[in-house]
Length: 586
Image 1 (spheres, one colour):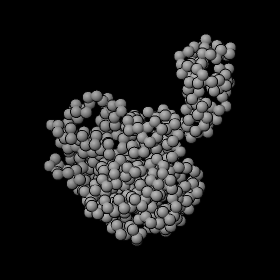
Image 2: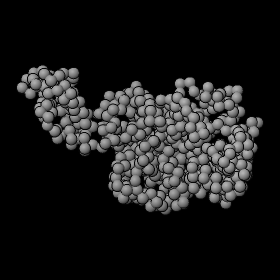
Image 3: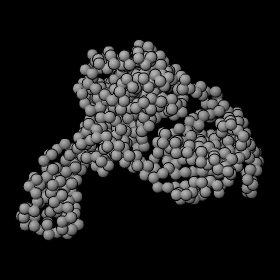
Image 4: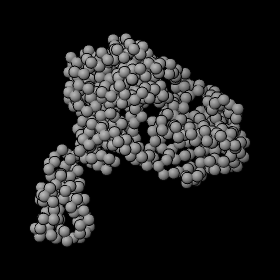
């Protein structure tokens, strides 16, 4: 037997051990396979010959249970158990075996308790308090895992909006401080408040050589499609469009729009005799011939270096086209231009209208802070009420309170609220089981101020079965909020499939609000589903998914993204008073 074949046997032994642990089967065989694998590490064909001749003395006694497995492998046979496990386990779960600092036993525990079977799900829960309670877990493991998962996402070129914005603002400040840069502003998907981005985009008026000198070190550079493009491994790509100062405002609008919105603006400009390009808005008759105009010629001056903000020039751009100002977050999709022309855009939600915060967890379940500290911090940040909804199950489980813990939590929450001078709401996040029932008894739930139902497992059900499951859950008399509705996780986990039109229509009929989960890895559901809920006459709940004090600001920080669904203040339960929530009057 060749060395390569022996190496294959060694690898298969460890794969079999890991898959057995993932499946929760035959722990003794898994341990024996690992012992045999360690003994075979680096050994050559002579070892295989000895084993085939019946000399098993070279293996430790702990590997005895793997003898049958080894014989099949060494003789070149197909190991039925290995094939069974490879095809029987969820593909996404098997892929997680290479996750940093994670054992197969830990992955099994996460799969059983939380349904984790994708990289996105693993990153979502990696920072939760209960993670160290896993077999062999700990805070150091959780930190190392989180760093590894973030690095993996960055290598794929995916950056969450918050982290991308911090990077973009730092670059914007560097460029603005350079002589030769007249104006600079963030544009693209980041300015539209998209939850994930793959590139940081900017519009710059000034000296191109200065921009290259500032951003070029440590990055590869090329000039294509009228833009400067910079790349460095593990970092977000930088895309800089250089424009004359006269066209800065119109170029900022154009580059902050998605393709559909840009084409609608371009058609409107053309109807009025203008020519809109990514480089700016031109006067009628300029730039349409064979000879190109010189720099700045024919450009419509809508912004000058002394303007206080880029928005001033953008407002002038929209006025020129006979439109009200359209905020960057709404510059996407078809129909916004027509709706704006009819005066159909709702008044923008403001942070002052957000009275309360839902989705607060404490260290008793998923959070990292005490109940008292989270309540005090909510009051300090100016909220009028705070809703605490730890995960709850009939029996204590990692990351969950038991139903019997709720009476004590109610007393502590009331006392904390009185001390901090803020109203409090006691809620619970409970699992929607496979048959559509809730994972906590009705007599426990009926005494709560609100109940959030979430699907933690079984996301892969068919669209029909998933719809039936959610529809049955919506009939529960205590269900107040449908939480993490699609279950999507960014960047690639799409979430549940079902007939959302029917589910959301039924939720609106039952006065069950739709949660908008503001965790940066969720941003769930997509604005299109939020709009569908509003069209059905339903309400939305902004849930901070707050594990720590800093997370409490999410309902305010995420307002640009929330505005994509075009809600009015009356459409959000966060704008109501606490008594309205308690009495379910919406």
